[in-house]
Image (cartoon, rainbow, N blue to C red; front, side, top):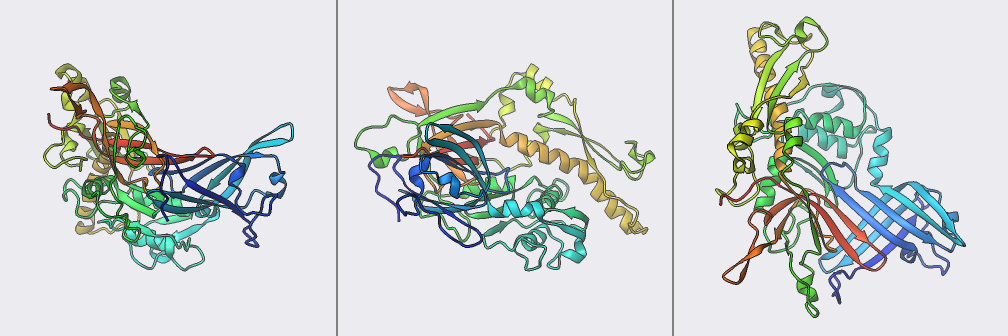
Length: 467
């Protein structure tokens, strides 16, 4: 149950180690299973770029605990904070950096989700139409990979939250791992109900957080953040998280409850790097699709049937086709704030991005087949460009924020950040309109230092207010 804090960073922390083969719980020199007294620091990390939760424990061992460790144990983290309780069980995959000082050993235990380790030896081979029985949509295939009952599937008991895709997938797997297959599908999935037939939305991500496995488009993640509310609790069945508001303000004695929702530190990670954006084609460029298996068909001309001409993408053109964080009607493209001379540089396409066309050897020869193929091929350059633009736009504003430990914050969900402006108006503090507002949590790390718990977050925001 949640604890009553004496300070904003108070936490109850229990750490246990379990042998996988016998379920034996390791004990310390006093016969107790709680090994938290050995901990110097313990970190848990979730990220929208990772299919598994990562953990790291730094141990100070003067009781020869290392002699009992084989390096394949399951480690169970139990946290209790003012926002609730969580339990993480992670697989050890490495013991590193061991040093000895007098009679004390110092070493690091590296951990990850058990499924992440199992993925390394997973194997999917053959036609998707044969391997997957539930259907050809992205959500149907991924559901079967994660929860299917066959020997080749993961069979996870964790929750699975999947956004439905609009297109079907048929492909050949050549000894692909589970997560590689999901990533392959993510690159080729179009969002259902998002955008239009001529301007579809894609940009899907696959990641794990404490709530379970997630497969969503960036636009759907942003729509969900905009719909989050401050009332109630996180619904772990539906995956809908509670929205928390954090304010950058001075902490005061006797206000432990209020201090729990005050920001400790804020770092502005990346801002206004125009040169890097120009070099990477962040705001404008070309996108092409071609068939590399046959040299003549790799020539990007309108006369070659297996090549689609380059699509000239621009952030200004694609901005209105995306979902954006913020209040409806008050979401401004940050690039419109630049001077005209700089915008002219940004809108000059200099980079070309390539994607590969599917092999057409077994395609139908009828006119309807050809029309369908050509329509699909015409969209590939657009989808490649949209996916890249969608990711780059999301990173317009990046913050690294540290707050008192809150285990009810999750990668892929939202948070409300309020940062005061250095200026005042009529003697009153006003909020910085650029850096305040709703953010997407790109990554979250819970950092326990042996006494207190802090939560560190990498936050992304794409839009500015209009004024």
